[in-house]
Amino acid sequence: MRRLLLAGLVVLLAAAGPALARPRASTATTPISTLERHPETKLVMDAFMPNLTKHPAYPLFSNLSLKQLKDRDPRITNQTLERIDAALAAAEAPPSVETTPIFLLAARPETRAVLEAYMPGMLQHPNYPKFRYISLKALQGFDPRISDEALSAVQAQLEAAGTSGTPRAK
Image 1: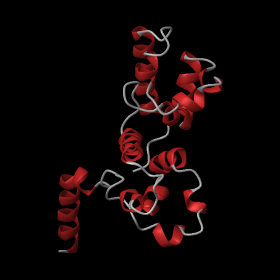
Image 2 (image 1 turned 60 degrees about the horizontal axis):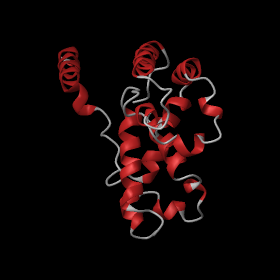
Image 3 (image 1 turned 135 degrees about the vertical axis):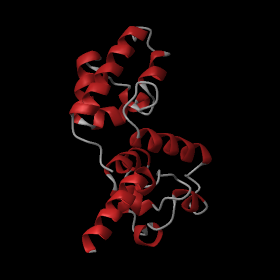
């Protein structure tokens, strides 16, 4: 009987699959402490809200969402929340030249290697701190040397790196 129950539970869990996955992170609903706990979302938090966990009042607001904290901190704007939400979605998705911010590609060793191979010197460029928040496709609008062919080649390598490299944390 016990084995039958366990087998039934395994079937139910397998069928539920994605329904049991961690919900998509957002600035509106996800507590800051949760964003800081997961590797992909921590990268985004470190990029947009550096040293937040070192704030003396962190224990008091760590269970709030960033949207809730916005009411208490005038430095957090709607535009900032939108940018963070876009980066959170990109961090949880497979790497893409269209949507993944460059800083997220640079953070993972396997995708960083692709950037360094196809766009040498990009990460050392003096303006990197200014353009690291945008995707390679968006950067193409500022640098005519980035061709559609180059982006296609980078995308193919990112997809290969995503399947052969370190798995993304769930």
